[in-house]
Length: 101
Image (tube, rainbow, N blue to C red; front, side):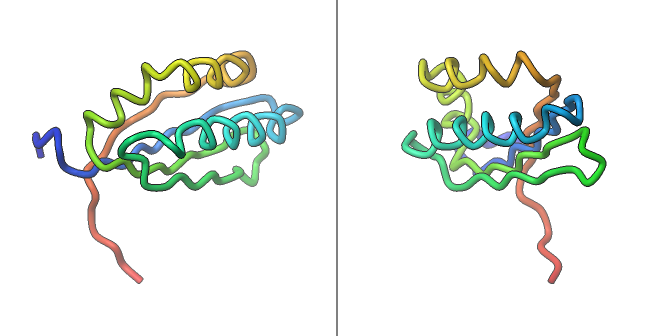
């Protein structure tokens, strides 16, 4: 799907030292709070890896353009600084898929 105005899902897995997982959760919560009031934000869900080494963020944005605009927001850029100090990550955008319940 190449529609820049279709909803997108961000799935981002952050890798960290197990001793920093709770710090990372707190930093990601602060990041989500900074994103929350931005145009196009729909939701974010954080998941702690049971191995203590990862945290996953599943976020939904109204469009790819809204997501791109978020990445340039000064509050979001500032909220990313402590995250980058404790974790590595590789974000990927997805189009919504099948829901199986």
